[in-house]
Length: 119
Image (cartoon, rainbow, N blue to C red):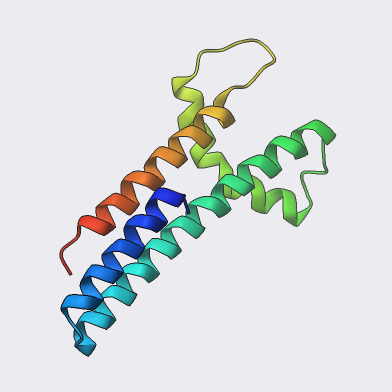
């Protein structure tokens, strides 16, 4: 999670906890914190899978291996979308870079949406 986002969460928790001491508000804050951490973890796992796929492409693993099929199954839908946008450059594939940037932007937007959601 980014430092700025952590600071926003901490400031929100301090303001809310100083104003409201009820159990209902505490549960709402914890639910929001859970959704933010879950979203951030999910996006980070997808980014790690893309990096693993990049590294695997350098070594040409056996496509019948379960780990290869898992990584390709997770990353292919995202990379397929990125390949539609990126121009063809011969042997170089820039779609993973675009996908990583897009996932980071999308992660930030989803977290901001969660923070702005009125619980």
